[in-house]
Length: 128
Figure 1: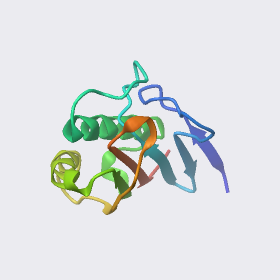
Figure 2 (figure 1 turned 60 degrees about the vertical axis):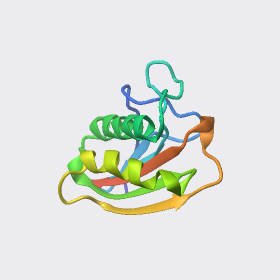
Figure 3 (figure 1 turned 90 degrees about the vertical axis):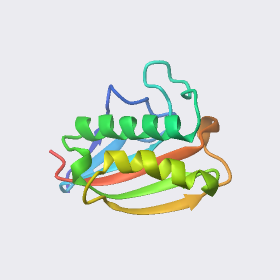
Figure 4 (figure 1 turned 120 degrees about the vertical axis):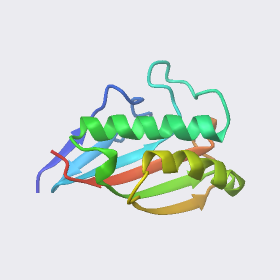
């Protein structure tokens, strides 16, 4: 099995000992993305809508670097600090998957890195 780390210039650098994504056997396993601005490395301003938008753009950049797109995502996991944010997060998330969205799990967590309110990871097929 060939295993290759993927690094995306358009997404924030990993803030620990992990890869932004790993390509293996035609799949791309994307690490969780939090709403860090890739240019500044800082958390974006705004509420859950702005944070979700940034997270999805970060995931999109990682997918592109890995040779695939949002259309190829088969599974995501959403981590929320407050499940009360679910409707607003879901509205933004849905814009990125307008038809045939991937399977998804959503869980509430106590805390996320850098004070983020949302983190999302993804698995995609068709990685080049």
